[in-house]
Image (cartoon, rainbow, N blue to C red; front, side, top):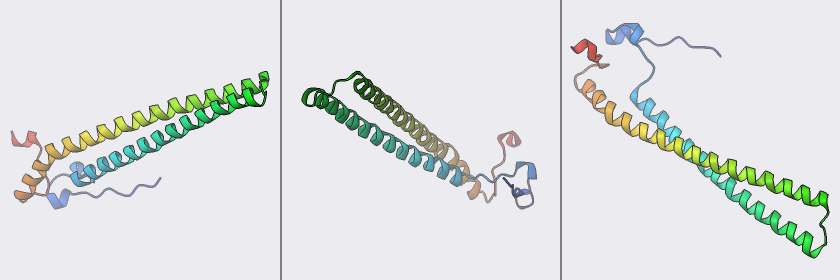
Amino acid sequence: MGSAPARTAGSASGGSAQHATEINLGRALGALSNLVDEGMGAHDDADGLARQARRLLSLLEDMAGDLAQNHNVRGPKTTRALNSLMETVQQLIRTAAQTADDALTAAEAAEAEEVLMARHYRPVQTATTDAGLLTPSARIHNS
C-alpha cells in the first residue's frame, strides 16, 4: 500500500503544515451518506435473504411431510438429513435477520451523525467562507 505525500495547506492558509488535512466537510458528509446508502442496501439484501430462507424452510417442511405421508420415506437417515438441513436453514434465517437489523442500526447511526455533523459544522464553514478565511481558527486561538 503506497502512500502519497500529504498536501499541506500551510503556505496557502498561513497556518502550520501540522494542522493541514485532506478532510473537508463535504467529503465527510458524503462518506456518511455513502455509509447510509450501503447500510440500507445491506439491510435490504439480508432481509431478502431471510425471506427466501423462510420460503425454503417452508418448502423443506412440506417436502418432509410429503415424503413421510405419501411416499413412505421415513427412515432415520433421511429424517436426520432433513432435520439437519432444516436446522441449517433456520440458522441462516436467524443470521440473516440479525444482519438485517444490524445493518439498519448502522445506517441509522450514520444518518444521525451526518445530520448532526451538518448541523454543527455547516455554520462554521459558512462563517469561515463569509469571513474570507480558508480555514477556521481553533477556539483556543480565539480566547
